[in-house]
Structures are given as structure tokens and as C-alpha cells.
Length: 340
Ligand SMILES: *Cc1c(COP(=O)(O)O)cnc(C)c1O
Image 1 (cartoon, protein in one colour):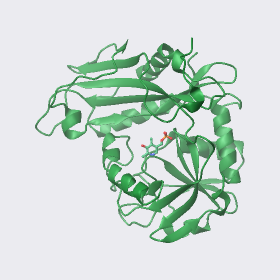
Image 2 (cartoon, protein in one colour):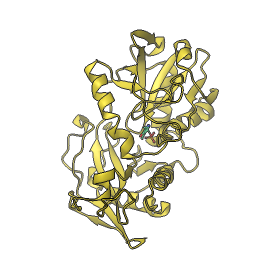
Image 3 (tube, helix red, strand yellow):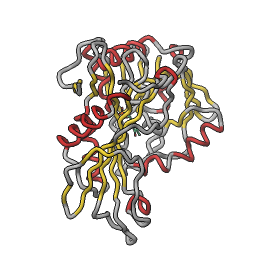
């Protein structure tokens, strides 16, 4: 039976559920893994994750579809990305097939927490991995825990979409040839100061420029960025230091294959964004958040289509992708993973 939760009132916050999936790595091998009920982690005070931030994570969602199935969206891409993150941080890879199996298991075990269709809420799934044994000299841990927690979350924009105001950040997010392309906790730790400062100054998010030349748009702290040109072309920045968002990659396919729009991934200079008609941030949490305005040191760059609500192309992208996720629109082969 579904839990007695006011689904419509949920925010984006952690709520412990009944089960989490845990697998431990020791002596060069992962154990079988199991569903457990304890939400707390007990590790050594000198664990690699605590001393040297050896940790990476993923984020995806489970949805109840219109016809009552529970599905998740492209978990194979999360499994691949976690493999890439683990390798860059010298962590053992949790096998991709077992990753997907574990996602299914933990969602099924917490089925009563999967929000019903039409509630606007979803079950957020957070796989992560960390170095768990003691290391004091700087080196990779030899023991790891892979864990997946799930938590029901509300619609990102409660009470309707509100276009965001961003600022061009004076901080850099990721170095050329650094770790910007992996989903490591380290990229978030160093973004916290910039985001708190942005909020204090009245901005919703930071737009980071490429750290090498500070000329090109990269992304925000936790979402990729896309633009719509005045002739309805959907473009997104190309850079090796951007986190490859699954939402963004999917939206580019939707733009091309479902909406018949031209798409392009290329370097996008800060200088040219004033020419664009729409701007949006993309990620699992909100799918697309419209951007109304980007402020570059006092100079306001407004996107005329998105100041009051979503621009028309952003809206179509949003409706189509969420339609695919909720089972109202046929999905491309392999995009929907049915859990139940
Ligand atoms: C997770 C993340 C995103 C969004 O990726 P999705 O796969 O679409 O959820 C974008 N940028 C950064 C820095 C991220 O960590």
C-alpha cells in the first residue's frame, strides 16, 4: 500500500525510505549486495571519503506511468557515467549490469514510496560510491561502498514554473583537463561558496565560463545549459569539462527527432548569447528550467521568450521529454526501463 504522503506537497528534500541497496568492495571484489533498512553509515574516522573526498554519485528518477507501470529513464547511461567517474577517481567500477539490477531492486523494495501518476512527484534515485577504509597518506582507498538511496521528491517548481536569473560567475568550476566531466562530490564541494554567494546577491545560479580562456559558456553548478536561436535551432556548449547531462543529451535527440529542429553542439561564446531567443537549464531534477535573464557584471542579457514563462521551444522540449518519461509519448528504443 502506498505510504500516507501528501505527494503534491513534497519538496526536493531527503526523506528516509524503507530500504537502501548496499554492496561492499574488499580484497579486490564486490560482494553480492543486499537491501538493508539502516539509513546510517558507520565508517572509520580516517576513511578515504572523509579525508580526500574519494566519492562519486549519480542521480535518476523512477516514475509511475499513465498506465500504472513503474519505470526509470536511461539507467544504462547513469551506469556508464558512474563507471567513467569511478575510473577517474581511481575507484573500482561497479559493474553496469549490476548497477541497473540494483536500481530496479531498490525501487521495487520501496514501491510504496513511488509517487502516483499525475501527482507531479517522482522517486529520486541516488547511487553513489565512496572510499570506506582508512587512508592517511594520499592514495586511493582499498575498500569501497556502493550504495543506492531513494527518496520521493516533489515537482521542482512548486506552484508553477518561474524563469531563473543567473549570473556569470567569477569563480571557475572546472579546469581544462580536470574533473569537470565526472560526477564527483569534489565538483560540488567547491561550488558551494559560489552558490551561497549567488543566492545572497539575488541570483538563482552561477553560469561558469571555460576556465582556460573565460570566453565560452560551460554550464551551471548542477545543470547543463541550452539555447534556442531566433531561427529555432537548439544549441548547447561543447567542452570536455562539462558534465555530460543525460537530460541534455536526450533533449537534443527530442529536438531533432521529435520536433524536427536543427541541433548543434559547439563552442558558445559569452559574447553571442544576447542573440538567442530562449535559454534553459537541464538536469534530472527539473528536466528544463527556463532562464529569463543572465547578468554579466551588471549587464543584463534577457531572453525575451522566457521572462514570464517557458519559451515556446523550451515548453515543447519539456512537454515531449516528460511525455516520454511518463509513457504518454512513444519512447526511442531503450530509453524506458520498466521496473514493474
Ligand atoms: C548531474 C549533473 C547535471 C545533470 O545531469 P543529468 O544526467 O541530466 O541529471 C549537469 N551538470 C552537473 C555538473 C551535474 O553534476
